[in-house]
Image 1 (cartoon, rainbow, N blue to C red):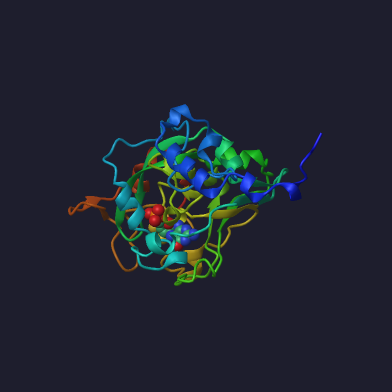
Image 2 (image 1 turned 90 degrees about the vertical axis):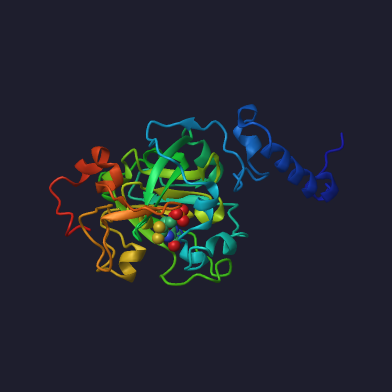
Length: 312
Ligand code: MTE
């Protein structure tokens, strides 16, 4: 029997690029219900920006409000690695390479692990959650994100009881991000352990039923709907369980203006502007900002007894 050694296999025998590219285009048009997760992934097993995510379930953590359009959510972004102007990330992040990708979950836990994107996508059922998202600059959007509670990932590594905070770190590579400016990189963020384990804390891999586009934080980011948008760190490569409050990018850059908690709070103004109202993208009128962005029933108890003016 003739067994081909790898060196004997010609490149022409491996599926040529134009065929799998066509297959990708073909798959994009097929209803997700007919496809398994693997078929929606690229040859290396990763979700590609813009491909449909399979078997996405509706979530109970959803607000019944008019959603912003895909166009609005993907062209008005804060992603300083790809420029400081909101119109820049959609252009500068176009060729951002998001595969292969791994997320290392490490620190104070029994089972530190590196997860591939394929493992992340398969770890828990994907849910569509329509969340209000309130930026510290007093604009807001409503987005159908896709993902599952961060707690599902954290539980996999079995956090130690000494782990009281969670530190996050974004990908950074100056060669791919020549327009990065305005902050120290890599971008870092943090949560208290009980905040990170709260079911609303979303580990997000998609929006509008599709894998995230680069400018919105592909391939995986956080979404924390009761906090100002800057807590929702994009393109995560490392999650570390730690025993003390970790540094956060905006606090490092300007501590008097940006605190660790950054809960949406209409009663505590930003030193340079009011936080009492906001403008939804696409609307002219202003609307009143709600305490914890309207998620108070779910999250207020996390902050019982805390002075939210001091812990801004
Ligand atoms: N994550 C990284 N890595 N870099 C960033 O510059 N900007 C933050 C946050 N996550 C940022 C980030 C800010 S300021 C906001 S308001 C939200 O992402 C914006 O998310 P969006 O562009 O999806 O609306």
